[in-house]
Length: 214
Image (spheres, rainbow, N blue to C red):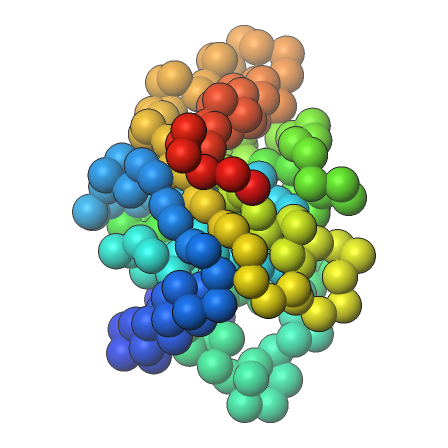
């Protein structure tokens, strides 16, 4: 399973996503200058909406690997997902397969988007993280960009069958975190969970600019 995006198709898809969000929403970002131009990067974000993956990546100058359940990888749509570097997650052995793809991407100097909470928030609020994101950050030594989405829950949250058209969306990208900032050390009894908590704390600190209202 290749996790390397097809550059032409990925860039075309990104342009379409950028056009879509800018055409139908009040779509803004802050902190994009924090994103490294090269090297392995983890976009660690809160997860509140179906819109989160494209909203994170539509405006950044990096090709990001995302994740989607394996049942979506059917027909032409499934082939397109694979071509843009989306990684299938199966119910069986999902953790092993996904982790291999993540580490392969990061070792090649790529970027991935992961959600420390593990699943979409039921009410749009931040929830407790799981240990997986911390483990990936510690083992890969990749730069972590805390990322917080505002407005996507109200537009396309878990209870929505279709998205609401119109409204504000803001993506805040925080200052880079290094593995030394995240990793509490091998002797810590909850090493990876504590690492995830540190990432989530940085996500929680990200706020809307004063002139923005969600």
